[in-house]
Each structure stands twice: as structure tokens, then as C-alpha cells.
Amino acid sequence: MPYVNVTTIRGLLSLEQKQVLITRLSDVLVDIEGGGNPDFRKMVWVSVDERSPESFGLGELRPDSASIAQFVALRDGTANQK
Image 1: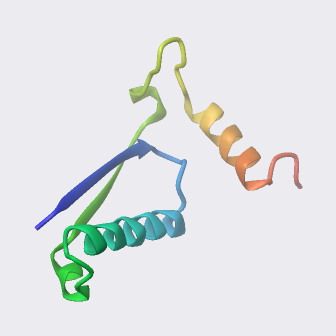
Image 2: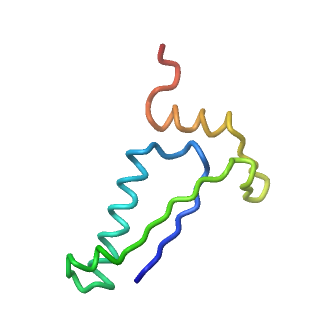
Image 3: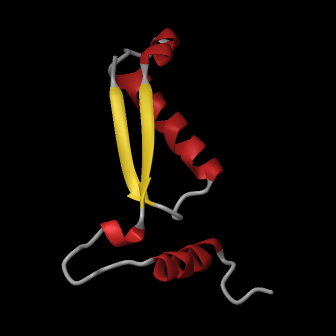
């Protein structure tokens, strides 16, 4: 029974994006570990854990809620829209 845990920054993924991530990761496990047997999906666990931006760091990079919101707006094309 495979268990996949994805840890991400809170606010980066919408509910719909999390569902797509869970589905696609499950698809990969069904194909590889389950040999393509669709019944194997019943045994696949995928968890998406979200943590505050302040819990992450990469070198000098220290994200915060404002920078994550700005990134999401740019990514989704909603920056500067009213």
C-alpha cells in the first residue's frame, strides 16, 4: 500500500489543483507499482500537507504570505486585475 506525502506552502495550490495532484500521483503509482491494474488505486494514499510560508527557506530565500500571494497572482494571470 503506497503512501505519498507532498508538503507545500499554504496558498500555492487551490483545492482543484490539489485534487489534480492527488489524481496524477495516484495514476503514476497505479501504472508503476500496480502494473496498470486499476484496482490498485484503492490502495494508494496521497496526502497534501500545507505549511505556512514562514516554515520554508532556501538559502537566502524566505517566503512570506504576501510573496506567495504575489506569485500566485502572477502565475494565474490575476495580478493587477480589478
